[in-house]
Image (tube, rainbow, N blue to C red; front, top):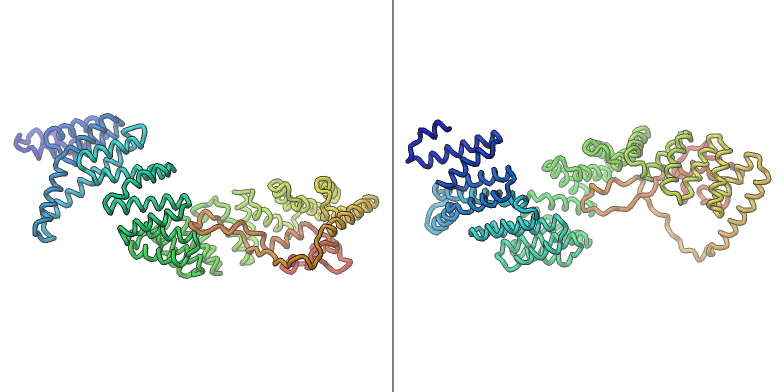
Length: 548
């Protein structure tokens, strides 16, 4: 390039500029930014152009020199070619020239390129030319406005409002965006859409709808404004109206991912699982790495009673987030419904390994080992449950029951005594103490605990209201499994922490080893007279053993 530059005559200024630019580009590729600067600065002195000015700003940015970045940006804005091109284009638009005119197309392309260079340089410098990012936005916007680039200046001001939103300074963001309410229509629509988004996240649905409507009045096919309004209606429970807005947003902008995702979510909420699944599968093709979308697909297959497909998609999700305990426990629950207890145990154990404080998983594992008469291992999980919920006496009772069933009556007796000292009015503990003292031959203590048991039972009967005054309450309806992780549900509401499954309830009843003939037990759990407290040890455990 230098040899070519030496042989270029003085009259070939344009050729010389292009050769100098190539020399500068070569130095940039070599990482020698200071040498590249000398070439670019020489061009900007003699025959400035937007492309070279942009490269000059990039070199100043790479060197981290704030003052020279400002100077370089000012030089870039001083290139008159941009404004001249705009004027020429306006003149040509006024003339009667066919749409396929080559010169008009070339001018448009030059305008687009100039706009791109200026926009990119502006966005690059706002974060570096000043220690305060907001001050950077303000300086760049002012420089653009002074140079006559009002559209880009407005873009930077809206960028400042978005910075406030990302920093959760919503008051400043609202103040900035409201300043554009009386500007031209495109700016009003842009600002109103962002204001609607801010108010939605602050829970002010009235203002969110108001500004979404304002944006839609200026541009009826503003997909983001339609989605914002749809979200407000979704949270208000107006699902059909929200679905219509999401469908309209998709019609206005077919690749609006937010509209597709939310439409699928509202279809799922309305029970239209087939449509929801089709939309989520469409989204998966567009954004195949989205764990939220994969979770929704897996959950819909599970809700549609297609366990094989649900397992397939939850395994895909588990490969993306291998340490997510809720995905692992959900897989275990599906395998349990498929009567594959070995796989159910594997995934519940993996879930416990990553998150050893999930009470659903802990209780399931404890119940699993009780069912398989591995009481020593069950103790580990019930002790962990007692550590997590120290005020819940049932876990301590299960620990004692496991020791009793494993044959360690003395240790079980000591644990029951400690429970009784902490909860002297607990009827279940007193029953267990009566039975275990009888087993150990402690006749004096049997009488002592029988007296305490009768006293506690009379106290409970005295405090209970008469049967006819008690309203009939239906039993709580728990879902059979454990809910999946809510972090993948998008706008789906959390359904709360699910209760134990029927399997778990039966297992926990077995672990407790409840004396079956004692009063205060539920009718379904009450055996024929003469049954001993180890009745569960010889029976299959099924839903018939659950309390009614």
